[in-house]
Image (cartoon, rainbow over all chains, first blue to last red; front, top):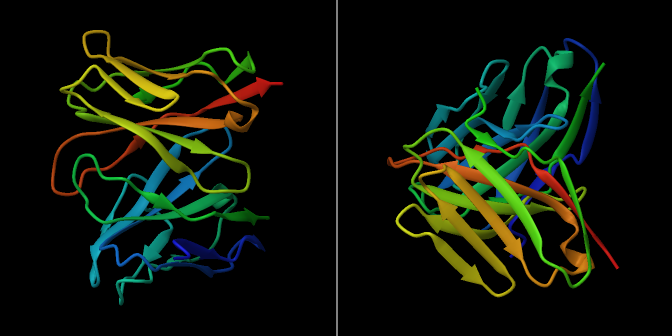
Length: 114
Length: 113
């Protein structure tokens, strides 16, 4: 199993540009998550999904959109990129959503907005 | 409002000695706690967890202790190895169908050979 894969690994955007961060998992997990990690900070949840066709906001959803058309894929869309979105983005998945779940993380996408 | 705090940004330990990483939390509703380990340029990986009904959980060289009255947990690594050098994140969650993980800011552990 490849686990959770993310593309691209790095990206530089200009202010106002848009892009999609890709995330795919091959563990047949229903639950998927997008986090961002700013320097010196913990991970903050952007959006999550409990299954195909179902998504919900996390702690910091502004400026982002997601979709979940299949169990495997959970892309994160940035519209009108801003410098405040410079961060490392991690996608994760888990087999359950309740207490005690174990999340499997992808390697991350480092995004810089200039 | 930082509900999960890791007040030590970094820790340096000699190989073979004990590493103790600390985590404090403010929300008494948290009922599950996890530790993740992160190497540079990689995603976090799950290390060990503990339910709030326990005060200790052990897995090989790793032991997590929970003190609910003090709202404090700690991760002990014995003996420490150079390969343990990484950033360690504490995370907490509370019940619900889809509970969210709240992460601390991380502690960078350096194990010196």
